[in-house]
Image (tube, rainbow, N blue to C red; front, side, top):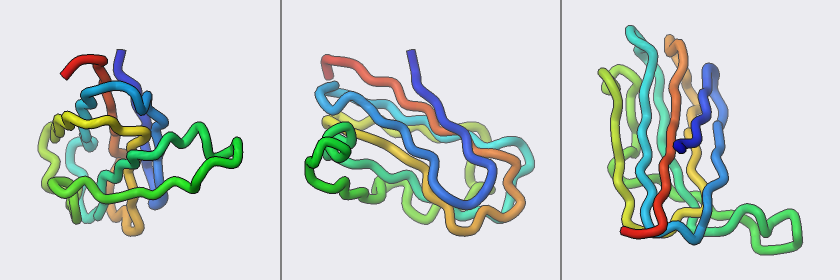
Length: 112
């Protein structure tokens, strides 16, 4: 079953994933008629569940194919398939513009 988070204003919407899963598929969708927003999809290879236990801090990096995405470019949904372990995924937006909402979904599997 896919996990999902939705954001409707500037900021971040984060999902903690299973860092052991071999494959993660990410989907980004925006409400119809959205325009003027700027967002990126970011991932971490770290295990965010270890941070509260004194583990290392989490480092986020922009998914290269999802850099500097305008919400008006999302006509239905964008899908990214990652064949690597991912500990977390998030939407990050400093300028949300006239976006109704953006939803981020992630589905993981144990085999590639």
